Amino acid sequence: MTRRTDVVVVGGGQAGLAAGYHLRRRGLDSVILDAGPAPGGSWQHMWDSLHLFSPAEHSSLPGRLMPAQPGEPYPGAGHVVEYLTDYEKRYDLPVRRDTRVNAVRRDADRLLVEADAGTWRARAVISATGTWSRPFLPAVPGRAAFTGRQVHTVNYRSPADFAGQRVVVVGGGNSGAQIAADLALSGHAEVVWATRRPPRFLPDDIDGRALFDVATARRRALDAGRTDTGGVASLGDIVAVPPVRAARDAGRLTAKPMFARLTATGVRWADGSRSDADAIVWCTGFRPALAHLAPMNLRGPRGRVPTEGTRALDEPRLHLLGYGDWTGPASATLIGVGRTARDAVHAITQLP
Ligand code: FAD
Image 1 (tube, rainbow, N blue to C red):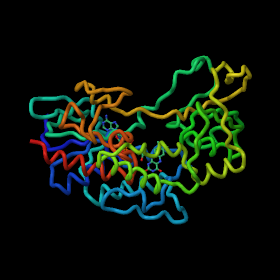
Image 2: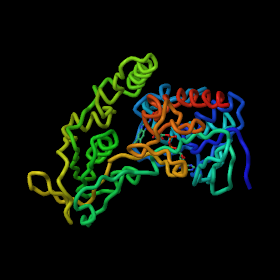
Image 3: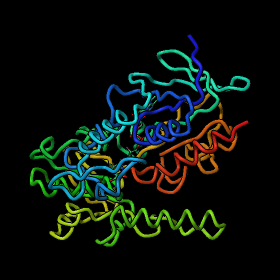
Image 4: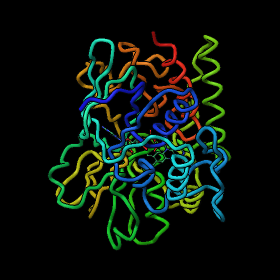
């Protein structure tokens, strides 16, 4: 059966909900198709100790402030799930769960969205599928030879799973620093942190609020045709959230330059020395989950779809939200996605 609607939103995480909010405000008929069984997007799957890098009031979607979490200056992931669950109820957003979109195709003056549960014909599509379902693992020599356990950020839950083990955490971004700190502070595991380049900690007083200000300044510069200020990446990579700061200040978060290869029993460093390891935790990032867009042949470099703002350059009826800064400054954050969602919905109202 083929249904008709103005806009199909693919993905019901924070980006999909922000889109739903603005679509509703504009009075557009829409449906949000989400592959998962429950609200909350990727926040449902984060590790136990993860906390936001901004206070609640700086982590809100449009229209509704995130309430503070009692006793926690920086809310935990479970609190975000509760907030998103409440958000979609409050605005009565048309989310259909357990509905994976397999393909989006052009069909004359409409886009066809093919999902497990049927097909939708829409004037426009907003893709908001995030990155969590596409963990990235780098090609490292010997990876297949290692006989211990290998997990990615997406499978990491808590230090208790590594009790008594020697663990190498790979990756110099926020996930790598936070997971290395989580393991090191727990005392459960012996941790080595391996990074491709020396870790770049942001100054301790910079949290998500300041990062958002930097993203805002960048957006203003771009809008005014001024030089790109480089966004947050120019300041550093790692937000010094309290556990990261504690582990770093206790001297338990010292990175070693990335190992040369994995061996059957551990790693071999560039200088030829070896460390035994029971487990490797790959905190090596994600790629955008865009397989459903393949029929439109829009892919550009680095697995992205070339965009102007949120709009796909080669398909004006398609917008992309979230994923990373390439869909708009701070588009992949709770506080930032509202603005890019608003712009995407505005552009959709201007379609012929
Ligand atoms: P997701 O939350 O991943 O939602 C995507 C949804 O799309 C999912 O529900 C999924 O089931 C669905 N989906 C996927 N493919 C399909 C398909 N083909 N068909 C239908 N549905 C599909 N941001 C902040 O603002 N503050 C922070 O402190 C912060 N900390 C972070 C910490 C970590 C470790 C990570 C990884 C990210 C963090 N972020 C933070 C960034 C960002 O806010 C989150 O990644 C956020 O979950 C992204 O939301 P999203 O809606 O774009 O994607």
